[in-house]
Structures are given as C-alpha cells and as structure tokens.
Amino acid sequence: VLSVGNLRSYVTRVSKLKETEARGLAQLIASAVNYCHFNNIVHGDLKLENIMMDNASNVKIIDFGLSSLYSLSRGRKLSRYCGTVTYATPELLLSKPYTGPKVDVWSFGVVIFHLVCSH
Image 1: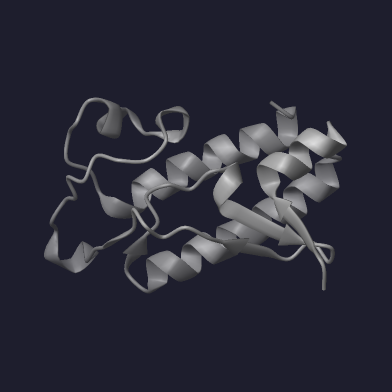
Image 2 (image 1 turned 60 degrees about the horizontal axis):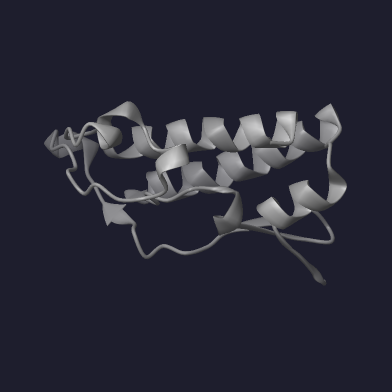
C-alpha cells in the first residue's frame, strides 16, 4: 500500500474534504488516540503533520518524541509543557498542570477543524 503522506499535505492537496471522508478519518484518528490512552500514553503533539495516511485511508500516528506515560488512577497531573502552539490546550499555554489525555482530545478537535474547514 502506497503512502499518501501526512494529513497536512493531503488536506493541502485536496483543498476541501467531503464530510463523509472527514468523518471517516476522524473516526480512525479517534480510535488510534483511544488506543494510546488505553495504554496510558499521551501523545502530546497530535497534529496533521504527525498523522500519516496511506492510499487505503488507513491512518497511523507518528512522532511520539513528546509523549508521556500517565495513570488516571494515581490522580497525578502532567506538567510537561511542549507541543505545537496552534494545537495546544489553554492549560499548556498557561503552563498549568493538566490531565494527560485531555491535551490529545483538544488537539484532536483542532485536527477535525482542519479536516472539515480545510485550514
């Protein structure tokens, strides 16, 4: 299966995604993020450039260099302030401790915005 590249280049190339395509990609990305969180991993830098897609529209999240392990059961918040500013939560921008998965969920919302609005 040939690689289409990252979602940034794909969105730029196709200009406007149809709603059904954007929804399908969002479901695949959500599943991948959920898998990470189920395994106590926060990606920490989820963005279009870190999501690869192949010709069959399969997605893979890449670049776990800023990822962190977390445990909701311990109740600890994370305090690693990194990532891409345009995808960052208010807590990250204000350098406040945060609940791990929430940063990925926020970034996922920004990804969906880009998919739907082609920005």
